[in-house]
Length: 415
Image (tube, rainbow, N blue to C red; front, side, top):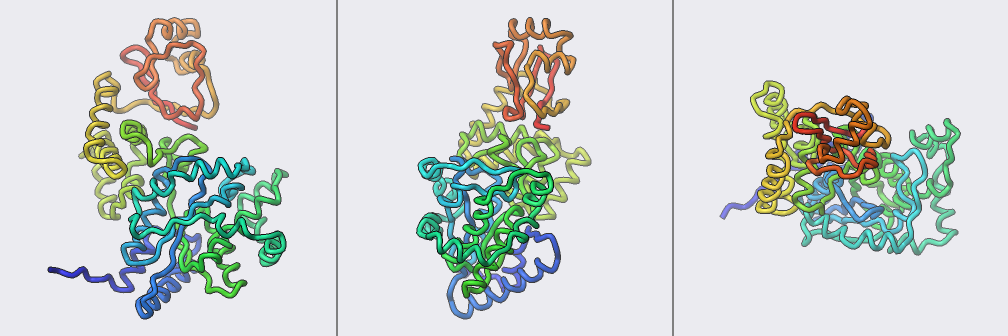
């Protein structure tokens, strides 16, 4: 029986640092060196590294964008390290302001608990349940008193927070920055302290929270600062441009039904296919290059690539049988209705009545004719007849295929 050979330290560092980005080469070099040192110590002592990533249950859905950091956690798991899937039951009460241009709505503890109910189940689509520690950060954050908060806050300056792009831009624009928004980075930093973390994984929007706040607070409280694994790319949503986000309505939930998941992947623009293969399927750079060359040369049809992608994604999160059934459902609903592969694209940045849209796009000569077409069943959205002339299409509804008659089609996407 063959025995699996453990990768060398150099190979482990290369694997674990793959896909990371820190904004400057020096920080990346420091993180790689510190990771190397931790891995060497781990092998000598036999103590696995303590690794975690946090996920705030602001909504009930985790989506494909979240799987980027989950796959990095899985790499640590496969190398034998102690991985924690941290559910931010306390941090989500405020919500991370890192990539927002205004304060988030504050949630109630009841809403957060309901949202968090299936988070672990969703994560286990990627992580190994037998090797995953699931924790909730209200376990330690809810026990801090006001004196504790003052002590923790004394390690940071207002200038450090205002230097962050999102806060700086809001400050310069005269927009409100609420005091409680500063607490988020402080709370996340304390997550690292409470768990005595060796490594924290996060996206680009977590650069300040992990590299600056987390490491600084650990050091101030006598711990060795954690290694930051910051993923360099974000998965675009179904619009193919903007980072996937539930609040923007361009997300593909992990728990979406197979037919819905398949259809949403098929709605992603062709140009986003390479990054989906890279970030969701984990394709190597050489395979991505070949895919891009095949698409550019026309050797493969974008539709065929997209259908294979949708099939594989549904298989990962459901099953091969579910993927096959979802594909047949898609073919029946769309291809058999004569919707062409290459559609003109119209971007919509604000709500618009469908009769106004039909006239503006030249799909109907007037609003009156648009209403007549709708009443006669001649207008469809994603293959379904529009029955109400007062229907309004909003960016949250997108992307959709708008069809008039048998020959006029346009793909509506978020601006």
